Amino acid sequence: MNMEPLEIFTVYSAVESEAAVYRDITADVMSDLRLASAVGRIRVEIYPAKSLYMMTAILRDVEMPIRISDMATVETSYENGEDYVKITIDREKYMPDLTRYLWDKYTPANVVQADRWTILVRAEDSKKDAADLPAHIIANPSKNLHADMVEFSIRAVPEGFRVRYHTFENNEFTFIASEDIIEPNQLNHAKKMMDELRSAVPDVTETKNADGKEKREARNRAENTEEEQ
Amino acid sequence: MGTVYEPYVFNGGVYKHGRIIELLEDVGGYLVNKMITITEVTMDMVIPEDDVPLIEELAKKQLGTLTKSPLTGVEIAVVSPTLASHHLPHSACDIAEYLRHPGAKTTMIGLARGMGRRVSLNDDFERKLINEHDIALYCLGSFKDCIVNKKPRLFEGVEVPIVATGGPEDIDVEEINGADMYIGSMGRLSHRMRSTNEINALDTMNDRVAELVEEMRRRQSKDPPAILPARAMKEIENQIPEIGKSLAPSPLVLKISGVRVKLPYDLFHERVRNVEFDEGPKLGEIADITRSKMNDYILVQIKPKSEVGFEI
Image (cartoon, rainbow over the protein chains, first blue to last red):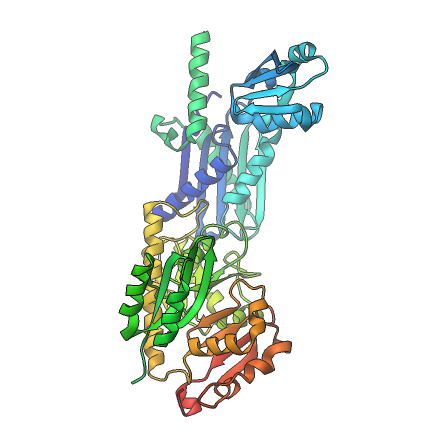
């Protein structure tokens, strides 16, 4: 299903102001874990008197593995009498992964970050390496998504709700937490929440809480795709 | 009628700040805490009410500022139901940090089993530790149902005034069993308190806690401690020089009716007991000196005038 980031983001609680607080908390945690672009639709329901917290989320189509060519341009360069592989960064998001990969391969002593957007690598055969590097996979966002979603739920849930249940199938994530045993009717309610979320029609104004940078990236990607078409 | 003291904080340059201390001692005031950060100095002090303009004048000459700090000499326990990420670092740390601005000393206490609704409770050690403070401020969450119906269990056995903070604004303090004050708009957060509303809520908290302290001091003035706690603190500092070697950030903490001495009880309690005053009595005669629940420190609780029979 094609979705905008956070096209549906609703939080329900019996008291409206408490729902607003939990909406902020959910948005903050999502932003901390950089999940705003991965989550398409999310609904949270909180019943404090019953010590019950339910969250259903539909994730957007998971990103493909990231190659160096997806985030940077690689070429050879001759500076101060030495041959280098010059990496010019286009997308900073995967910088830690790229640095980790280069350090492992060339050792930190041979990786010089000249400025924010440029990395120079001292390689034995810089021409060969400059040709090979772009195809290397440095990050696989889908691999960490399940763990991140669990982390997200645990951070967002009210404190003390230690009985937890979660499922993650076909990009659909359900999480229930309570202080008591989770009952079958609560599971059924979560399923119903998921069905409603799946069939809901998004309101375009709902994307306002998406993380600014992620939203911008998503829009740029969408524009690029349109141009290509 | 005895001298009335006012708490103030001086902020200014390190250069010649000793002149402020000298004048303070000359007028009979007490330096509570001094902190030097590179070229700046912050000094908490209590000044006799009539002599405040003198110090103010000198502070102005030194290009420093003298501002009233209503919470100087108050030790507050900032209690969060647990040490989990739901409370720390936001908002409990923000609250503790903000209470220090007007001069309070804060202790962060995370309860071992305070989480949730069904199981939340406190234990004997925690109750005793909280009771060593002047005020207990509980950082509670965002659900009214929890604050009103479940969390008051955490107040059981706490004898010092209790301030509860939480998210909902529409709770009346009478609804919370055991609390003396409720401050809203400060519930669960997962970001630093920095927006206008959040800073306003913290300002309100400081004002209201200051009101509570004023009320506590007013009540105390009817039967004051046998000696001014700030004076007892000064004498302990003068007569036990080892206090200067204590590695605790503030080795002597002034409380509303006592002092916490951050030295090992077994080694120093006799010497604290034998601290002498010019008028004759020793500290042990006019104060209860006990072992603190906090790191085996020494707790000096000055007895009221009615119990000792005189005031010095």
